[in-house]
Length: 67
Image 1: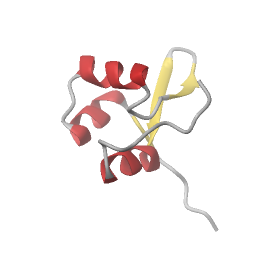
Image 2: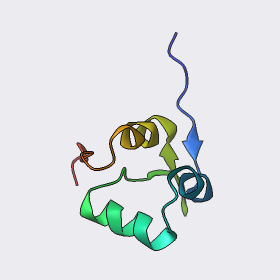
Image 3: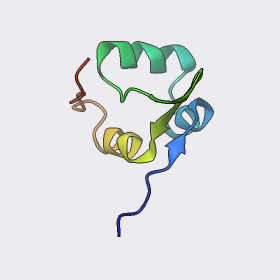
Image 4: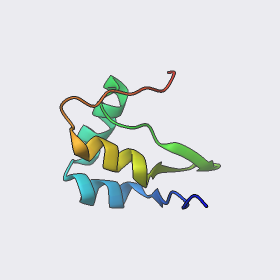
């Protein structure tokens, strides 16, 4: 059985990555950071596995999602 992937809120992502709010969104726009996933109206979260993959090598991480 697969384990469930936890969603992180922006505050948790900022704490885990040491990025500022502005830098986080700038890097998402550039495609250098995982995009958030819509959870409900007006609410987004990041998959914990996506953040972990980015943390493995932030300089070489590139999005594989269609924009």
